[in-house]
Each structure stands twice: as structure tokens, then as C-alpha cells.
Image (cartoon, rainbow, N blue to C red):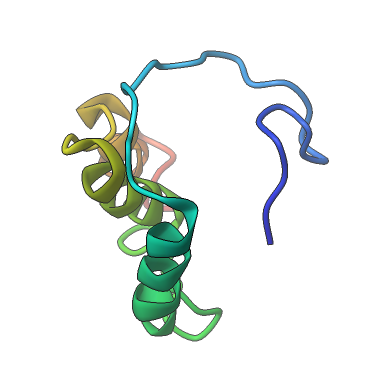
Length: 87
């Protein structure tokens, strides 16, 4: 599935992080998505260790050569280190 940025059922993003530009053709990107899709399924999803942020990080690295910011990738660890996290 795909939607334009900010057009999801979850509303507008709180923050937008510019990642750069890509020159990868759409067809190459779509082939890449098909290649990695077996790793990102409902069965492989893990809220704290293999989630949408990991997918976004991998895709960003492919498209622009840099991952998403660490503060996003580290959110699960931050939550788990909070007093309520382990509950």
C-alpha cells in the first residue's frame, strides 16, 4: 500500500525530516520493494525490533544512501527503558 505523505488515516506528520533526493527510477524501486517484501510481512512484524521504522530505514538507505535518524530507530528502546515500558 502507499499514500502521499501526510495523507494517511493518522493525520498530518508531527515532523518532516528531509532525507535528500534520489535518482533511482520508479521501476528499480518497485523491484527493490518486491525483493524485500518477504522480510516485511504481518508474520515477521515485531513491534519493538522489526517494525515500520526498520522498513523506512532500509528503504531510505536504498534511495538516498542514509538511514532515518537514530532518535526514530531508538524509540522502542527508549520506551522499554521508561518505568512503564516493561509493562
